[in-house]
Length: 162
Length: 168
Image 1 (cartoon, one colour):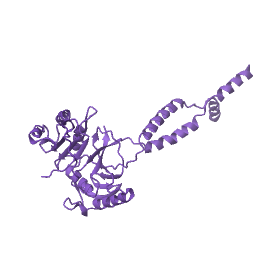
Image 2: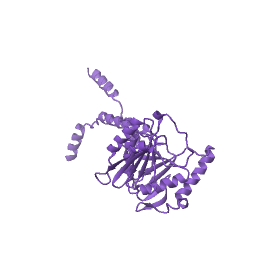
Image 3: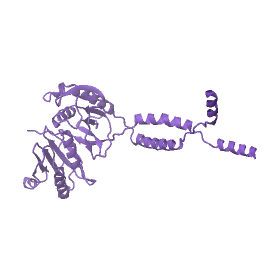
Image 4: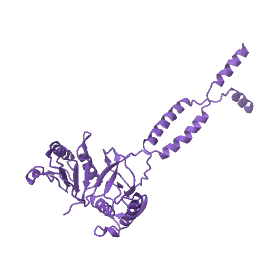
């Protein structure tokens, strides 16, 4: 008896129709938004977790050549960790002898490569520096001076658009 | 009548679009785009550090005098001064100013902006500013000072900011 009742009930059941039109609308809007975001700039900056970039009114887009990232814990060059940072000081970077640091040696190599490629005595390349906003000028100055000594006096400071 | 009704019903069912494949495509595209989209828009501020260079020719025309403003960000104050090869010390001393900080670590950037506007009005060809922060000054404050120096209401003030360490 109960089975008979079920059958009779199933016959009456109409398969529910999903109203996917509204969902389609939503998806279309999201898709368009994402496509616009995607096409705005084909940049791919690998952001590390322990970095807080300062906000700025700057409107200029960066032109990436060599990327230096200074987080609270370390100094990275093109996504490779080259030195640690402790108490606002880059380990292994002596301001009195910057040429002995790994940073100088790597940048010097890069500079030599660029000179060979471009056939120019002084290539007009710069460094994109992404630096945590909590760092003091002393930490930045040591890095900036070392980079300038290696042949890169021009910088672009990476900031977040306000 | 019944045949007609059936036919009408069949034609109504045929007109329904099958949205499932489109939905499937959307479901694939959206997660892909979400993973590759950047929600942070990174911009850049160009700057340089002082380097040894050959001396350039000095223009003798007063209208073309290029004043270089020097901003020292110290612990308790902001020292402003200017230099130009064409001007004598007496004229240059008129541009010397010291702005005391009201709150520790918060630099009076509005006053700096006003000062830079006045310099720009007098010497419109000026475009270079040397920023000398104290060792303890935070990077965030340096960026804010650079913003204040670069432009005012979309008008360029001193777009060439040179970052330098203090010599003392």
